[in-house]
Length: 80
Image (tube, rainbow, N blue to C red; front, side, top):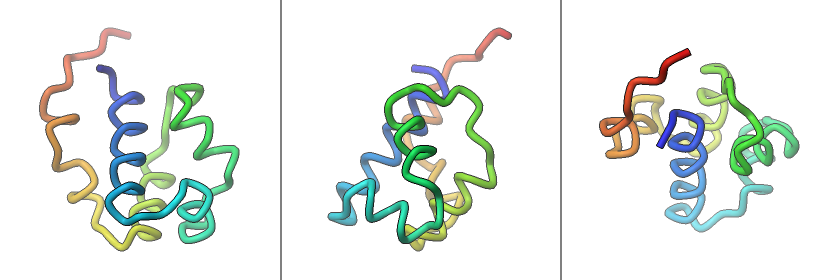
């Protein structure tokens, strides 16, 4: 799993935990639907920390809580 896939999985997992749709998350966070769709569909490769912070604010979690999962602990080093 790469970082983009981990972010997408985490967003979907959090939406499921909060019982909200991705569309609702967009409304709550102020991030456009197209941006979030690109993230969860694997089209966005360089997801900015500002975008992730906005999503966290919408979800009412900290950025630390967002990244504190096995998805990010188990990432392999990505070669550029």
